[in-house]
Length: 527
Image 1: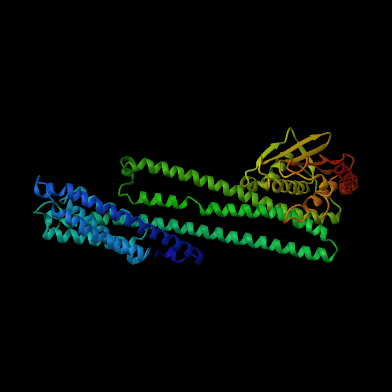
Image 2: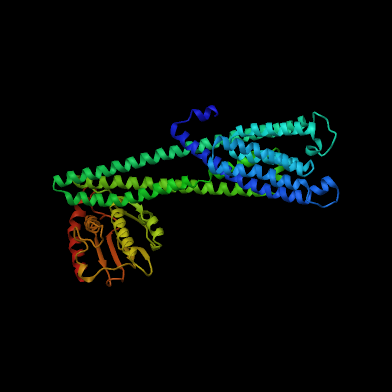
């Protein structure tokens, strides 16, 4: 093993060895199929060519037919048995290398020593390079040179097609075998270096994923600690609201992390390594690309891999960006609860389109998995001035409830997010075609602890209504009944009052919030 391979971390070595083991086993299976194909080809070659090559035009069952059947079977059956008994083993690889070169010698003999058949030797060496183990080329080359030497001395027409040849003729063939071995060894070492690099990157991604999961576990522990402290202080309702909102974001964090790991697992890096190995295995890569029929296909294949890798990189970049935004939102939720104790509101100017798109992205994977049609109806909305994370908290709860309502829907699964701004008021509607709301339950849906879901807690809508009131607005609901879907309407100021001082924003929100809660209850009763 090269020094670079021995110096890598333990996890990288484990992944590298696992990749090599898969390459070895795949190579064994490839050669089993190749041996059976060569056996059939040898029999056909002996039936058609051998009588003419050795005995003129007289057609008969030539002894070469028996050679093809018996010696071909003697080379193929043991290979099949070893691959079944010891797949991926070092002994299996080396025996396959020896037997494959003996196959070349048998086919050369059956063809009467034709020069064209000698190219089978170079093709066999290229196939052996698929193992990415340069050591198998050593016994393969020795068997080839020894076969040329012995048959050149005692049966030259079997290997060279002539009765009288110079004794040193085998050296010429041995030189070209050595030349291809050197080229293949260079390609194999390069391929192993690329495999090691891929294993190292995968180990880094696994380490990053463990760190991310550790952070998520720490957040979970922090949530549990917050629950205990809040209950001890008589603030269980606030704590459960925070946990509910953070839990919604954590679902998106887990989805994004899973997508990143899936992209790495399905990466096209291995396909690129195989293509490079094929190109390196050619004695003259330029002639291979220009003259071999596989050359243009290889270039097209490399282009496809490059495009796929660019797509993977972009997808991972998008998901990592989503992870960053989700974690920032978790921090903002905690900071938002801390800001209530200080009596200040986090107001900022933001594009409404971006806010609504971010809210939809948190549940994007669930919409795709459940085949939910999402309709964006944002109208001619402009920038607004409000508390970004408070609005996101409300929208995430509403969109999550709408998605759950669509889970039990057998007909059309459609979710519409509609936004309008008029007279300094922002109105956002979340409309679904889901299970709907029974009229008797309409007055209870914003009550703390009320839920219709088996695993629900009844915190989302209750906390959303409170946050809407704190923003100086209201949250209402409407439904035509069970199976008729539901519409949740959020109305908040699109900007704070011009006469309000910066320090008075929280006070205004709380004062407006009291009236908003009354309006919300009245509107629910009316519905």
